[in-house]
Length: 315
Image 1 (cartoon, helix red, strand yellow):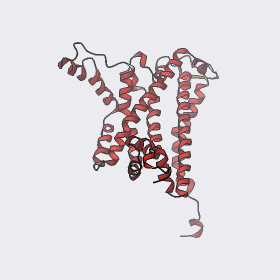
Image 2 (cartoon, one colour; image 1 turned 45 degrees about the horizontal axis):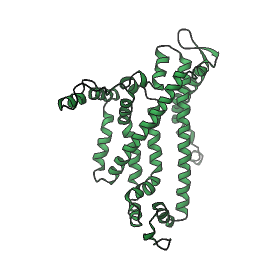
Image 3 (cartoon, one colour; image 1 turned 135 degrees about the vertical axis):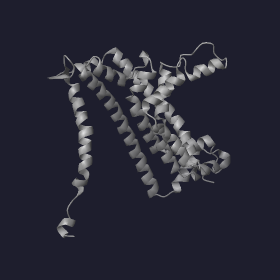
Image 4 (cartoon, helix red, strand yellow; image 1 turned 60 degrees about the vertical axis):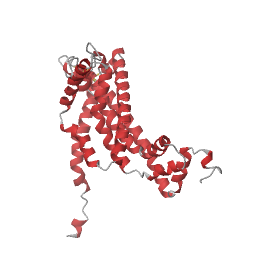
């Protein structure tokens, strides 16, 4: 190999494809959305290249504010429920000897089309669906119950749809967790709940952050589930954007709403990144000073009763 050739910097060549991909499919669409949000609405759709703040002034509309709050509340509730269900699932998978089989079961829903899964829930929860038929057949009800077209059904289906996105990062993090720390906490007097909340959860924060991001961001921009499962009172921002693009053809307003979603999700991502950096610094400091502080932290976190530690120090 020639010396001059060996010293050649191939970094830009390697980074070129990914830089081009990000420019074409991320930066360029985002720039177009930003520009359109500050343009005047076209008479027959599209935009007129004239600066206008009309789209952002329209965001102050009471209806839009209500839908924004509803979207935010729905996203938070669905994300919290998803994490609460995914956490024990990820823990069980990490402790199981059949991890491959359980992972396969989690991934199997991805093999089915998204809309087919939504229509499957319609078949289950519909007025003449499987659930109402079962309840009537068992004599528990005489007439059907309206399970569909309300906010609760939207949250239920959203949780189902995005549950795998929370289970997988949590499982990956819990699988690397040192379970002997839980036994140490129990030996030091912590209850099972204390050992979980004060030893396990702090050590899997990175997985929790990832799971929250993977579920909250797509739920906040959800479109198909509120449209097919929810009623007129379950509209979310994604549905408003679709209406503005296809019905009223107000592209600047649709772009402005998209900017709201982008800003909210970006703020959430930055908050999560800041928390993760803080956790990384703490882990680095713990590694630098050795593992002796870990048991001390467990001792303090578990709030061991005095009977286990009469001298007030480590037994």
